[in-house]
Image (cartoon, rainbow, N blue to C red):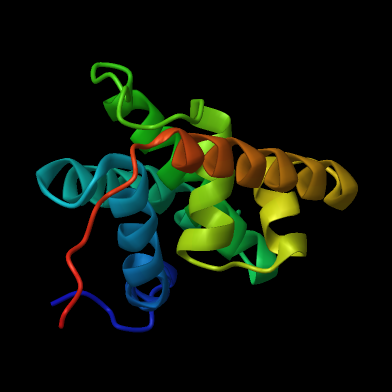
Length: 150
């Protein structure tokens, strides 16, 4: 039986808590970036597998722990998305990521700025551009005729 007070056991227990704390938002981000399904589950699992060695080295703590989880998730999703075209989206990958963080999982701007490593004014400009692209794509869609309910 392993010694429950050993540093390795304590680190493993802390990582289990970290995984429980961030698995839902990381999975939600994976679903937004890759669509719900096996690929999102694969990206989520790969995220925590990649973070485990960092946790054991005590490299993840505080606010950096959340940012690290999202950054690694984005990296894992990018790897999985390379082999699949995103023709359904009018956004490039970087804008798709920013949109998922802001509109999808609704992180605060300072957190997104830290994750994407850009300034808040730059992020606001990017989000404004995303809104404009999405509005233009929406206005280009054909009007749908809906019969009245009368």
